[in-house]
Structures are given as C-alpha cells and as structure tokens.
Length: 283
Image (tube, rainbow, N blue to C red; front, side, top):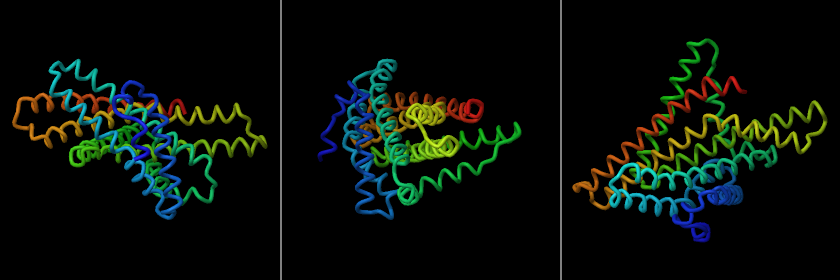
C-alpha cells in the first residue's frame, strides 16, 4: 500500500520523468526484500516484487486509456492521449533498468551469481550467437527480429489475459538489459584499473555513459514497441471485461489498438536493424 500510493496515473502522465525515480525505488526495494527473505531465488523473486508494486498504477492507467477509446473517435487525438501513458511507462522501464544496472555494478562480486543468476545465463545464451559474414549478419538480424516479435506477442497476450501482464515482460527485459549494462561497466572498470592502477571520476562517468549508449541505440525503440503493445493489449482486455465487444465502441478500441500494434512492429524492425548493423559499428 505504501509504494502504490506514491503516485497516481494523472500525476504520472503530467510528470512522466518522476517515474524514473519510482521505477528505481520499486526495483531497489524488491532486490533488498528478495535478498533478505528469498536469497537463493532472488533473480526471479525480485522481478515478481517489482511487478507487484507496479500493478495498481498500471491497471488504473489502462482503465483510463480504455475510457479515452470510448470517448474520443479521432485516431490522431487518441494517439496523442495514449502517448502520455507511453511516456511514463517508458520512464518507469528506464528506472527499472538503471536500478538493476546500478545494483549489478555496486553489489559485492560474491552476490552477483545469486542475485542475477537467471539474467546472466540469458545473456550468455544470447552471446553464443556468432556474427561474421554478411549472410551470418543477415541471419542474426532475422533471429533478433523474430525473437523480438515473439516478445511483442507475449506482451499482448499477457496484457490481454492478465490486464497488466505486460509489465512482467517489461520488467524481465529491464533486468536483462540492466545486467548487460552493469556487466559491461564492471568489466571496463576492472580493465582500466588493471592498466592504470586507479579509476577516476571522469573515467567512471565515461564508462557508464558508453555502457548506457551501447544498449540505448537499439533498446529505446525496442522497449517502446513493447510498451505500445502492452498498452494496446491491456486496452482490449479492459474492453472485453466491460462486455463492450458487442458495441460500436469496441470497434473503435480494436482500430486504435491495431494502429498501435502496427507502429510497434515498425519500431521492432528499426530496433533490429540498429542492433545488427549500427551498434557493432559504433562499439
């Protein structure tokens, strides 16, 4: 009750940047509680507790957005209204990601394998994909794009079945990205320390900035696509719960959600292109 009362949908949409700090707080509390109570299962329990804290806000927001679909007929106006919710969802996700990355960077090394066990294994599985020739790169693009589409489908299904279910997929992805960023930062800091003997504040800032940028190039459009898909699925779910699927209003909901999902697929295509062809050139 304490965490969920910190902010409401109206305030979140007016000041979406505050969700950055809310997301960081939700995740930090979840990690601390998981370490304290469920230490050996921390890597999954912390996801559950982060989601648990987020559900009331997400559900209230989705209900509000579904109401807008009923009252507003013009698609441009609807998308503008939905963009406010998308903005604070994105800041919430960023808060999750920064929290996971921060805890990975600063936790003692002997705790990392416990706290981020599942996330680390997931990253190792992803890194086993080898790139080389153009055909291998093209094949990697296909794998990444369709894997992202699969995640997108999960966002829609989870949101449709559970209403706020997409937040689980988003939180899980935030934990994996956060661990990837944290691992990059720790490795680079260790490398610099080994060669120079010390790491200055400017070097810390540079390494962290590079780590964030490395994953932000393709991560921003990819995550935004998941946010859009989750919101669209949630809106449909609330419409069905209210038994509006036999009315003309539900047709408007389906049209609005379809436009959002097409936009999400385009974002995923852009994200996959950036990840395969642009990010390796920069880093």
